[in-house]
View 1 (cartoon, rainbow over the protein chains, first blue to last red):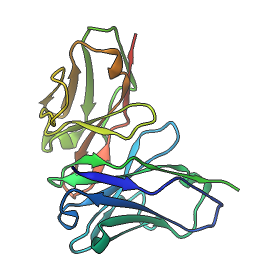
View 2 (view 1 turned 120 degrees about the horizontal axis):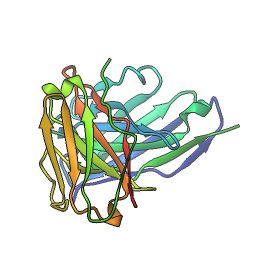
View 3 (view 1 turned 30 degrees about the horizontal axis):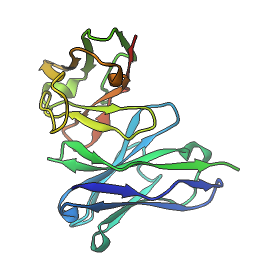
View 4 (view 1 turned 90 degrees about the vertical axis):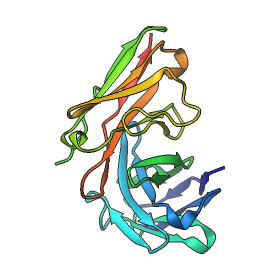
Length: 118
Length: 107
């Protein structure tokens, strides 16, 4: 059974750094692109970027390039999304999702709620 | 810029048919995909390649495509279908966009 299990909710202050995780299991982690999707409170889904764990190829949405860093450790089948300096506007639910056929997301993590507040 | 346009909301009575459209230039060359998101839950893949249903998705969910528009149809709407629905499609440069979402309300 394919599963993506994300790390727990985080509460941070503006300016702090953060790295959230997404552990994949039940499939060949290295050979599927994995992506990150943001959902701000009461808003829609926004694609942030994807990564191919096998060769670390990364593609960012223009809206998020330079704002976040996507990475993965294929030895522990885990993908990461990190910020070096959080802003209040980063408050959102973040989902990881597996990309299939390089076209669509067939499995999703349960989401990680990030709250940034002073 | 790349956009996928959906109606903000659709209201339907139980047992009736709901149709949600998604329009965008890229859909003329790319497949459309649909996700269902219920309150407090992660999105779930509903349809892929315009009209294919993943295992476990009820037959009342169907899809079609014409020109630059894909349509999600929910036949015989049930109360449990009340949710937000998002279309999605890749563009030719390998980036992925979601529509703005449609809230389906079952009256």
